Image (cartoon, rainbow, N blue to C red; front, top):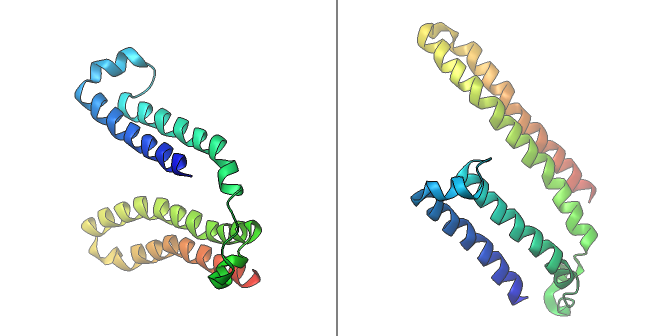
Amino acid sequence: MYWLVALMSIAILGLVVSGVLLELRPTLASRIRPWYRPALGTQLVVFVGAQLGLLLLGVNEALAAPEAAAGAGHLAEMSTGMGLAIIGAGIPTGLSTIGAGIAVGPIGAASLAAITEKPETLGRTLIYLGLAEGIAIYGLVISILLLNKI
């Protein structure tokens, strides 16, 4: 299991080293791969490669872990299916929060511009912002409903 931690550490260290190297010497990046942005592209390739290696090499280690001690209580009863169900219940909250963030950004910028020109439009712009933030609340409600079914 220690080699999994080492592989993750190498992935993160690779990100940091490649970012610093490509920031200090941008001409090196154009010789390596001229078809994508230097620092971001190289860091993504290093990170995704290390994560794929971790996934391919480490899935057996994670699945072959010994059973938890019997004295651990309710944590010993956690199965793979239960873990996936809990992750599945959290996905609606995460995705709806991302969607709300994407919606609130332009709406907030436009509402600030509108308020600057006409201060009496403050009430309308707050309604639009509230509707955009409601997306995250809907995702949270769905997650709570899913957690009640587990």
